[in-house]
Image (cartoon, rainbow, N blue to C red; front, side, top):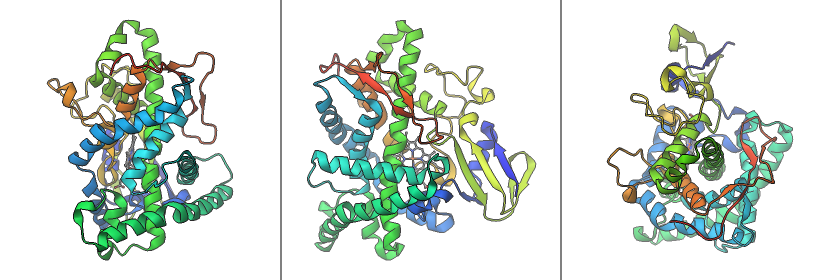
Length: 400
Ligand code: HEM
């Protein structure tokens, strides 16, 4: 068994596009990830992705960005306004959980605090299972927690959500059908023949894929912006007045902090790799997103610095490889990151993506890191994520 590691941007790009390499990042986390979209290969993957992609349309994004999400952000922020302080990691979990629950197809009929707390607890357990590869905890203990959490999720959330959708489907009224992953899977059940346990994990995975990545990217971006402002105080106006600049800050930060530092793959047959290497089925392929995204040949001499004025390298994305490439490229990228701006983009009619929307809201409330309460990294994972990030803010917005 040989481990082939790609740390340079061009090699990593090519490796991500090789069709005969299958997903292996989540092999340790199969308790929650077995047979979910990101772990499928070949025709099975293509067929499911094509169906699920039906809800990732521009119209649906617009509905979320213009109507649903501003309300969700306000409702989630309201309880913290009295004290004007909160942990940004915890807030991120709450706000993004609500959005991804809608997208995944998980109803929250009570909309009570207790219901959110329960879903949040389950989400965190699923997250620890999915990232078991990077976990510093006892792996068997985590797996048992995930199995119990899946049972609870099924009883209290998934089964009632399925029943409600099946009843709408049986009435044959397309107009009332929700736009979510669960509905797509139920409507196309005869094509997919998906066993119930796979359906269960697929929905739990969507909840995770949508929320967890965005949460960590949000906190990294907030931290990078404030650290950068300390050495560039004259640029405060760009942060407060220019939403397109904030989106660029988020994309730049996401390049520096990919949600998983590596993508892992395994050959399904003997394959040619970048750099004239070849790999056999026993070999492991490590695509180092973290270092590839800091490749000076592509992003310049300051590649490992946060520079929101960076120009898009020729034909490349500002976020580097942080949303993946090839068959598993992130299906939710536009939802989280919006679309790229151009010099003539109208800031009042631009799709910014959910994370930039949250950062804009925080900036408009003058949110800053809490100087009396330093942030801490998450010690439960080897992934370099913030675990606790206290901030303070004004309850009144200074601008919209
Ligand atoms: C900042 C936010 C996000 C980041 C950094 C991110 C990152 C990624 C990356 C790197 C991959 C590829 C994994 C691989 O190649 O092994 C991926 C795949 C995926 N992402 Fe995202 N993601 C984000 C937001 C979202 C959202 C909001 C959703 C859904 C609502 C989502 C759903 C998915 C799904 C379903 C896949 C698997 C696609 C497939 O295998 O065909 N992601 N994401």
